[in-house]
Image 1 (cartoon, rainbow, N blue to C red):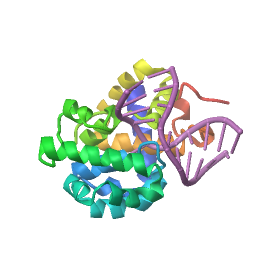
Image 2 (image 1 turned 60 degrees about the horizontal axis):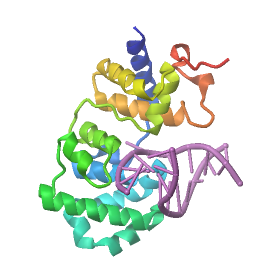
Image 3 (image 1 turned 120 degrees about the vertical axis):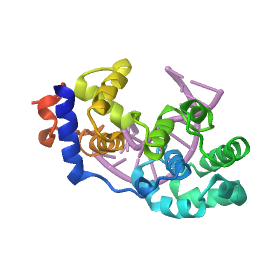
Image 4 (image 1 turned 90 degrees about the vertical axis):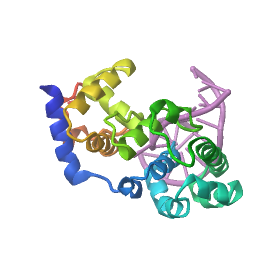
Length: 206
DNA sequence: CTCCAGGTTT
DNA sequence: AAACCAGGAG
């Protein structure tokens, strides 16, 4: 069937083309959450230059509160949007410390209630930190599914769920989808010529 | 749906 | 100059 073939080719591509980022070797829910917040509307390459230092310094939300917004701003400066980000991270850390004892909750309803955490970052925490089989739908994976299956917003999630069922590891498939969308099925200038899914894609161009 | 908010890419 | 970036809040 179509789904199995797509997943197979995707994972095969990913084995030799996957991107390596520091936050991908982290399993702490807080450090995964921190990466998610930093990556919002910001290039992964930019974040990867700052993340190791931040992750080492702010090992838990308590460290964020200990440092304070002003010190946080200095550390976030190279990323841009440092004022907004510092404020958001402090607010996030305050809620985590006051309501969850400095831990990151595991229920999606709780995660989405956290300031600065929406459906996507909640899914990232659930999948990459807690190992749940949930799709991580962002700009990239949404574009990929949309082109691949020729569907629009409401059905993107359904298709994604179907693909997930064909994968042994939801983590691997989510990362594969993300990397594939970023490197091959790009927003500008998609590389349809060398796309391993070309024969399976509804948007195949001549 | 609009705004956010700044650096990078094309 | 414009589009884009691992979205979320109002």
